[in-house]
Amino acid sequence: MKQLALDIGIAAGPTLAGFFAGPNEPALRHLALWVGDARSNTLHSPVPTYLWGDSGSGKTHLIEAVRGALREQGASVGCLHAGLLDPPEFDERWGAVLFDDVHLYTAVQQHAAFNWFVNAQSLQRGVVAAGTMPPADLPLREDLRTRLGWGHVFHLQVLGESERRAVLRQAADSRGVMLSDEVLDYMLHRFSRDLGSLMELLAQLDGYALQTQRAITIPLIRSMLENE
Image (cartoon, one colour):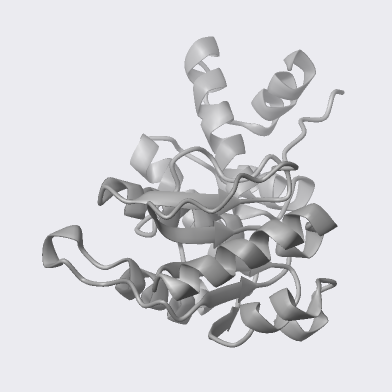
């Protein structure tokens, strides 16, 4: 049986409204207030926000949701993630800068992040960053590490099984898909605990079920994996 590579991150187009917060409600509420509403002409606070937590806790979803919300307001946004090996220079047209997976930054990326941070602060632009460790433990240059930690810091928790089950059930219902308890157990115990990956699996299963004109069952999941 072939195994799907399910740790593929959050599906395209994450939103703040689509984030099931659970124990992470304070972080979601803070970011929703920070993003504000374009029609209210609310100024985004220049005090930095840092999110940290284990893989699957929703950090990248929130970073991308903030990015999408700001772009919907017409703002240009600088975004630096660990895969961007040659970061551009800071652009004064950016309304905010976002940093994801900061714990993985190379020396070059740390230099760029520090430059972006200093410029954003001097121009009163927002900063939102995320990593797997609290600021004090980040393996980064001291001047960047301390700056990431001086503002709002939120520790994100991975959703428990009952919460992930509820999210999957709700998502399946919205698609008009029936998921039995047996199928939910199989999905939750055999695949990544990352909710984004599970949601992507659900989307793949829905498409495969429609293609094969079959209900979503454990045999269908196995069939999809074998034919991937």
